[in-house]
Length: 328
Image: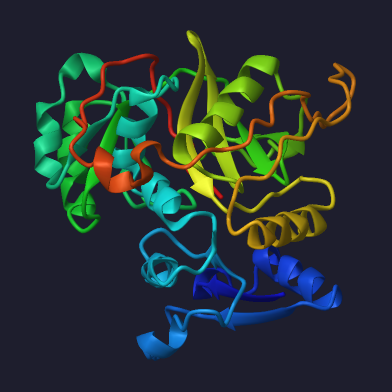
């Protein structure tokens, strides 16, 4: 196969996706790498129909890579993940509306175009987590304990574009990152970006059945095949605080080969969802679990387009309290 990887400068030297590219090349496939943030691109040449079997995106949320992926998709090129699905999770305000509308345990979410409008959030909702709607890798995530502190942050928030705010979820200082790759789910525990602690090391952990079911449902709701889900275990149960397309897959065993196989399967199927696969039986003694039955094949966005959800209200009725868990 011939594949095109869109890789932002931010990830130029990262293991993901470079290890995947090396694996695909070792298997005899041709991989072209385009760096959308550092290239003069003649658009008609970039998206020529039929040149590649599939395009794969690994870029920061606010970069130009998604525009190129969408241009390729418009010509009929297969993309991994589906370009509309990526848009649906990279806009965190849209992701909150879409997830809540489809029954995911999402936090109450306010969205504002100007940071001073956050002053209208009721005092009773503090502390708040405030972050850019197009943020990634924990960029500009703030824990705001009080309205007074919000006022102090306004100059810093002014350059971040659209913002979202969510009530903070009390937690133990760690969150669970669930990765979906090649139809299987893997869980890791890591330090929350709001509670940095050098003593907390990222590690594989058993995947609770309730969290596994939520993670599988995330793939269905957003139409994703390769993705990560940040989950906080709050006092009222698990809460989804972030969804990432093509994350780092850290701590996933044999991650490069697994992701490479998934990319080839999706490219060969024209972007159709991977079939469900069951892993080993769940065990309370293993540090990595693949939960049988949890790997539900994702479906396309309901209605066929993320744009259909742009009119959903962005102040979502609370189903659970929120935390902050941006990350790769």
